Length: 174
Image 1 (cartoon, rainbow, N blue to C red):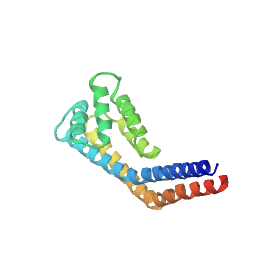
Image 2: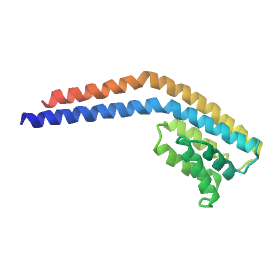
Image 3: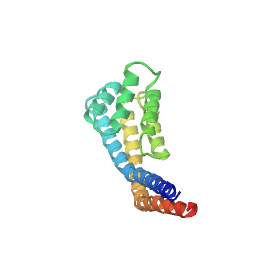
Image 4: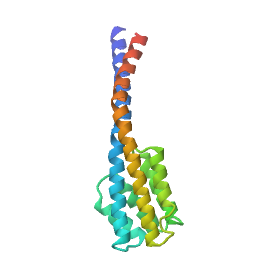
């Protein structure tokens, strides 16, 4: 029976440690994702402003240039718009954001910034869309600052919490 207890204790410790490290990874990845999104939106702004591309083409061109997870967001929005699968640019953007959000480390507030941006895409002239892109960029910069503060405060905490909670559970069950 002692071997089973030891195996069980090891499994509890590994599982709780993995959970703690997983949460810590979300805190670590969020600022980088926000920086990548900012770069993507700057490229989108350039495509709309200087290249004067229609929105579906601009989204596809920016997605082609990217390599990170934000490529999924822009590519999906472009696909939805290009194939006529949705009735508006806003809806295409919202669906793409939801798909992207489910696989990202972003917070609900970050998601809201992206959803708000989608409300203005495709319904106004080029200058207004650029103004909304710049507003979203400034909001993402603030979100990045907050994310960096959260990361510095919480990343190590969650790693230790995962290890320690596993240790406590092992002590309780033994």
